[in-house]
Length: 283
Image 1: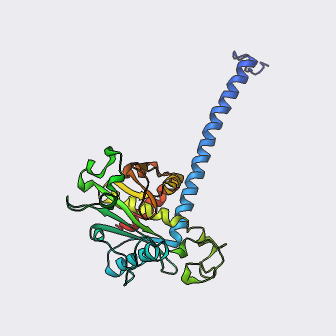
Image 2 (image 1 turned 120 degrees about the vertical axis):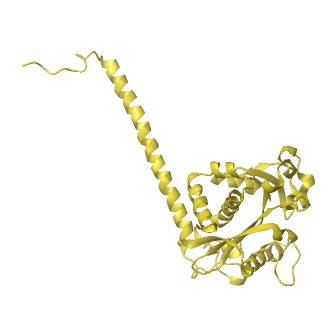
């Protein structure tokens, strides 16, 4: 009876066989690991998006009562809480640029409370200015990324992002008084509270979606340098184009291209952006 061939009969030495098997294992293990990582990221992305969208709904404010709700939230945050702006008798914080702005909201589905608002200011002619041009033009030192370096119908600014105090608290912050912005732990579940830090991120994603939809890729924003650094956590990398100034607190001018904004987002937040976009612009 003829014996079965061995690896050695086929020309493999012990050393070469060991090397070949080691290489095969390493290459295939790497492929399996990458596949598992990709699956995990996809699952995390879906869970993050589902978790956020289970409790919150994004929309474009178009009706007068919706716009007034945006102005009221802004008054609560910018005038009453932070004292960045003077109090208004009607408790509605409005400016002339609101007339050439797109206003986005995020609403808590269960309570119907508005969890935040942001506006995307755009220009339709040479007379209209972005807030960064009107109030902080001298702070922009990088002329390559000055608003004047781009066509007027392709620039916009993320502005007046406001999240009510009640949506910036954690359950560990014991409820004291709802009027002061505390969270009533009997009204919001622990699962819902884990979403609250993402409200501000959701508003930035809403503004980014609006910039892309309206064909205005050159986006400006005045923000705290610390916040700009923290936004890298989700893959949003703003370019600082000027010095820090005192404008509603210590802020600096930043620029980002909306297409880069979308491309650089981490997978989970890309899914959130897609979902928020469909909420803002339903088919």
